[in-house]
Amino acid sequence: MVTSLLTVMTKRAGYKTAILDADITGPSIPRAFGVKEPATIGQNEIYPVSSEGGVPIMSLNLLTLNETDPVIWRGPVIGGTVKQFWTDVVWGDVDYMFIDMPPGTGDVPLTVFQSIPVDGIVIVTSPQELVGMIVEKAVNMAKLMNIPILALVENMSYFVCDKCGEKHYLFGESHVNDIAERHGIKVTAQMPMNPKLANMCDNGEIERVEGDWLKPVVDAIVSSSSVGK
Image 1: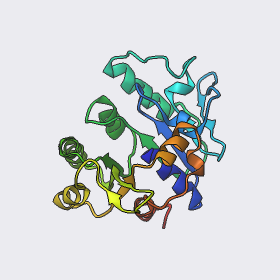
Image 2 (image 1 turned 120 degrees about the vertical axis):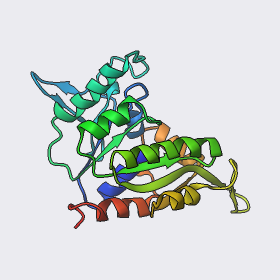
Image 3 (image 1 turned 180 degrees about the horizontal axis):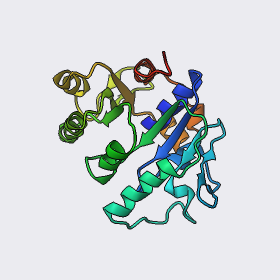
């Protein structure tokens, strides 16, 4: 959801965006954008599928017969697929490419960091302290590999009651600012638990979502790049 919304919001800001779905074993980007047609494979190249709003997307789900077909691959094969999505896909003219990665510090992040010229990462967490510990591993991995951390996003941060309008922190107090302060991350954002937002994502309507939760992150992405300047 965070990858999809950042892509949509950056495109609304006037930039050409694309998504490389590097979550090979759990690809969900096509579903969020309502993309169902398969990618086109040429003699030596692969053509991404564009969303209704014109976002080129490449995901393993665009190459399988069914979106629920399991991918039972070992690390080297997964890593090779991620590299192929970068080298063999005809992306065209793109200002910002967002790469969606699975959680953790395993094969996919390592492959992305070592094989693709990454300008920066946005790390996603949730309020639970256990998740915060895992996220700090990702923060430390990025630092070890000299990858700039542009922002920290806390998903499922709170719920706004329809009746009283108050914010309720269902998973406990937010830790996003504490983690950010410990690691010198200047930009943070919080995403609410919102059934309407979740339904729109499930129904492939992510490009119709309205909300400014991630605007500070988009500003950080744009200001950190030569495109935004």
